[in-house]
Amino acid sequence: MPSSPKFFHARQPPSTVRPTVLLVGFCLLFGLSGFIFGLVSLLHPSHQYKCLTSKSRSIKVIWERGSSSSSQNGLVLNVGDGNDNNKRKKVMGFVGIQTGFPSTGRRQSLRKTWMPSDAQGLQRLEEATGLAFRFVIGKTKEKQKMAELAKEVAEYDDFLLLDIEEEYSKLPYKTLAFFKAAYALFDADFYVKADDDIYLRPDRLSLLLAKERSHSQTYLGCMKKGPVFTDPKLKWYEPLSFLLGSEYFLHAYGPLYALSADVVASLVALRNNSFRMFSNEDVTIGAWMLAMNVNHENNQALCSPRCTSTSIAVWDIPKCSGLCNPETKLLELHQKDSCSKGPTLESDD
Image 1 (cartoon, helix red, strand yellow):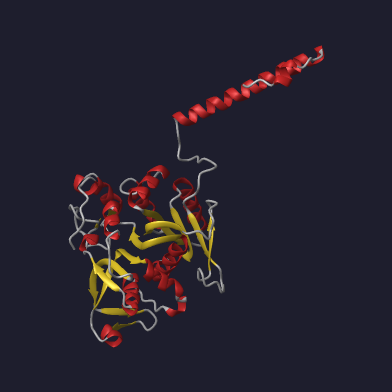
Image 2: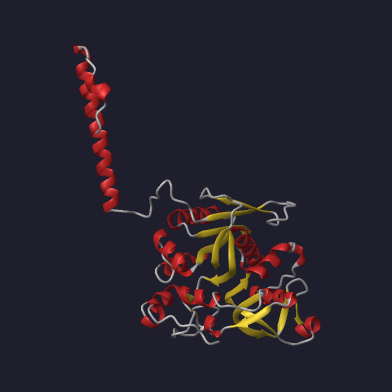
């Protein structure tokens, strides 16, 4: 401990010697305790404890009811990392992994495979690919589930929390909320919607998004043709010929697709009641894209049934909407070199 000239050279009366010795002893003991604690922390790090100066990745998004704000369409961001809420982080792409309260096991499997569970690993992945990743989830009135989610957020710090009820029947509303929140938070070239039950290669997705494109408004996905809309209000099937003059229209499979920044900016600019919501989220997005006359870019590598040298996302199409039994299948796929260690090649599609 550095000595104080004033302390050691000043003449002290005999009555003050004992308190001075005790004070010096206490300081030495305190310093030694701090050294031991620091040494133990270095030798046995734990993700349970975070440096007080580290920035949180998880973000809670709240909509301001009745706001007339035009810049963020009534969106107020409650950010726990101390960043300037009005400053959008620049990334090439933002990937929102849509998840729900029953999907704790899926998230754990993902964190053991292609999405790192520790902050350092996730940071390295984002720096290497130019893509930011967050689990996207809404809220529930069940206090126990919210408490469990709060613990998971505190432990892994990889969530985007939306101020919207988490219900399967409201997936189109959640998807729109996600794109609006993502646009307010990140200045990205692409905004990607992904499900939590697919095996993804972030490096190959990064290469796909980085390609030069002549269209600024791009809807990128594994495209399919859908024959009908289901109208939840009228409760009957409404042929597309009635709406679009054709029985079929092209839209992306729901587990993974991306919208360019210009497309998302148009979505953000519209009011919620300007959108017509259908029962299926992927059909809803497809209808909006058709109405906006954006460029549809079909890439079958985004829905590969097995791992190949060009597959970007793997899931059990058409048997399941994602991977069948995803908690186990994700771990099994990650053990295969063709999935986790295969060469990174651009698809010709």
